[in-house]
Structures are given as C-alpha cells and as structure tokens.
Image 1: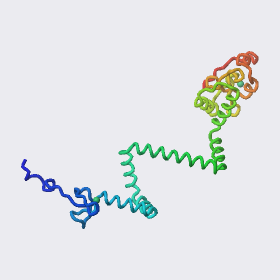
Image 2: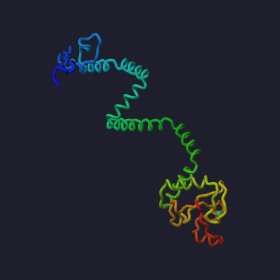
Image 3: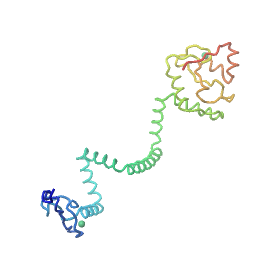
Image 4: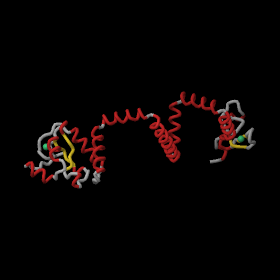
Amino acid sequence: MSADSLPHESSTVQVKQCSQCKEIKSLDLFYRRKDGKFGRNNKCKACDLRRLLEWRLAHPQAAKAIKDRYVSRNRDKVKASKKRYVELHPEARLASIEKYRETDRQKCREYRKTHKKEMRAMFLAWAAKNPHRMIALANKRRARMKGATIGDQSAVIEFYRTVRTSKRLKCHWCGKLVPKKERCVDHIVPLAKNGAHAVDNLCCACDTCNSEKHAQSAEYFIKRKGLQKHLVGL
Ligand SMILES: [Zn+2]
Ligand SMILES: [Zn+2]
C-alpha cells in the first residue's frame, strides 16, 4: 500500500496556537467553534477551563444558579454522567460516601438534640409496630441486671416474635394450647438459678404456669404440679 492511498486527513497533523498560553497544540485540544480558525476556539481547552474556574470562584452564586438550571433541564444526562464517573472512579465514590456518612451522623446528632418530641414520637411508633422487640429488649435488660448470660439476640427476638404470632402454641409446662393473649416467654432454667437468657433456655408458657412457676427449677415445678414435661414444637 503506497502513502498516496492514505486519507488526506490522517497524513497531516493539524495544529493551532492558543491565543492565551501561546502554546502550539493539536486541534483536539481546542473546543469546537464553527466560526473559529480550523473550526476551533482560539483558546485551548486548558485555558478555557482555567478561565471558567476563575469565573466560578469569583461568581459563586451565579455559577450555582447556572448549574442548578442545567441540572434541572438535563436530569437524565446528569444522571448518566454521574454513573459514568462512578464507574471510572470507584474510590472517589467510597470517599464521598464516607464524607456523607460523617456529615449525616453529625446532622442526626443535632437533629436528636433539637427534636426530642419528634424522636419520642418516632420511637413510640416503632415500639407499636415491633411489640415483640420491645418485650425482648425489656427482658434482656432484666436478665442483664440479674447477671445472666445473654445469648444471640437475633434468635431471642425471633423467638419472641414466634410466641406472639404463631397460630397454635402449647404451654411448655402444662401442654395446653395457649391463646395469643395469655402467652409468656419463660426461662426453663430460671435466671435466679443461673439460667441463660438465650433461645435454648426459653419456652412459651401460659399465664397460669408462668406465675405459678416463678423461680422454681423446672424439675421441682413439674414434680409439684404432677405435670409431664411437654416439648413445644416451635
Ligand atoms: Zn492555552
Ligand atoms: Zn401452662
């Protein structure tokens, strides 16, 4: 293949001198401009960007207004460009998340201080939606005060939820079906006898058995009541 057959454009490198920094640069380092020499701006991209940054620093409010207007008119474009940036700079994204979290934590702290009423209302709403968690929390506190070993809390909370919501549940001690409102979570080995506050030491009991048993050991309680120990299939 001879040199003559090459397309004309690629055989010549077009260059232009920047009117600002006076450097001679290739054309792709100048922004396009229809009425400019070679269809390009007189200043190079670097000089254009530097001037733009200087203007933005000198006119922060006007710059923000222009940016906001652009963003509101080009939402999809902005979204796509952000996505592209994040793909190219994963580490920048992590840094910005970390920064956001820190300011967010500070904001939360401030908010909690200045909105005590709202915080209480939020807590009460949460408590109303999560009664089993509330009961689990109260019992955990009670168990800790008695110096009991505390087991895995997610399992304990799940146990409380099951006791509250299961359709059919038998009392661990008397074996009778317990209606939802009469169910208690009981410690098989009492906390007072070094029983753990953990899921394998918890059972569902009826109100009657729970209040009769108190801190008696399981063996003593079963013997005294003449009960057979029923295992509850939770
Ligand atoms: Zn320049
Ligand atoms: Zn019972």
